[in-house]
Length: 71
Image 1 (cartoon, rainbow, N blue to C red):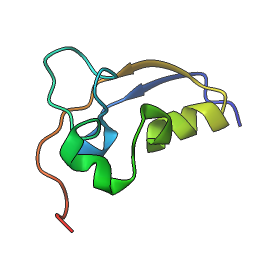
Image 2 (image 1 turned 120 degrees about the vertical axis):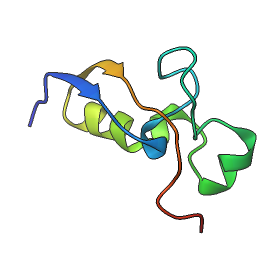
Image 3 (image 1 turned 45 degrees about the vertical axis):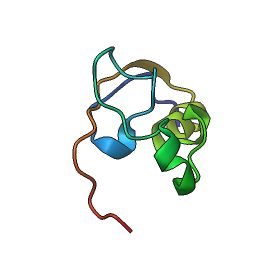
């Protein structure tokens, strides 16, 4: 399946440092979140989806707030 153009509107788990608009809070890409195993933007769900489905990411407009759980 080919996605075409993609825009992500998401929460903390959709963010990655330098992959969202400047000034937006990010969850992944911080030193304290490296224990989660997401060590690069290539490891995020949205990057893997866009790559697998041959999409074109136009914008990731996600903002980090609170997470669903803390464990």
